[in-house]
Amino acid sequence: MEQLDLDLLRTFAVIAETGALSRAATRVGRTQAAISLQVKRLEHAVNQTLLYRHAGNDANAIHIDPAVAEQAGFKGPILAGQNTLGFAARAAIEAVCGRDPTRVRSIDGRFAAPGYNGDRLTTELWFGMGVGADTRGRLVVAFRVVNQDGAVLVDRGRVTIA
Image (cartoon, rainbow, N blue to C red; front, top):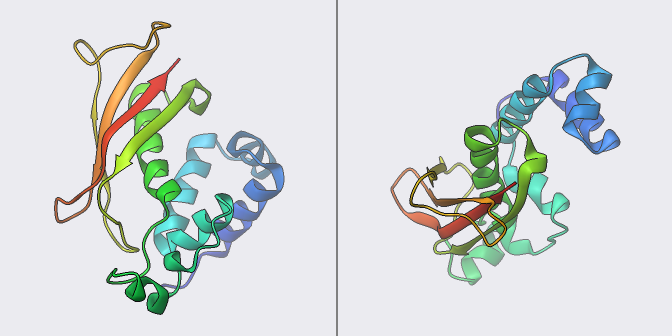
């Protein structure tokens, strides 16, 4: 693992303490977009599963212990579903919501294959005419998440946007 920038860790600690990117940005004197980029850098610098494991209260060892993951038939520890959906949500927030996460009303999808630490995840989004809206008229964004090999990790994804 590369040497961590202490500023990234300090910012992460402020996010955890304040419970929100916007409040953390105010406290450290940066924009929310700058804080979001720092979180991205931190996610790539450390084992992402460790971050999402605690955020999602998922203590399943399959996400961190190679032996447990291999016993379950995987090639190594798998990404938590919350991690993978988090990438999709962030893509929708950046592409459709004007970077306003409060506009997301729901997200769902079908987990189709496991993701692994170090995978490069890409979220493919479809929205606009022909994709649709829910019964309240809110925009529905269709998505899927693929890895660097083209394997579909999340299929039939939907994000409802206010």
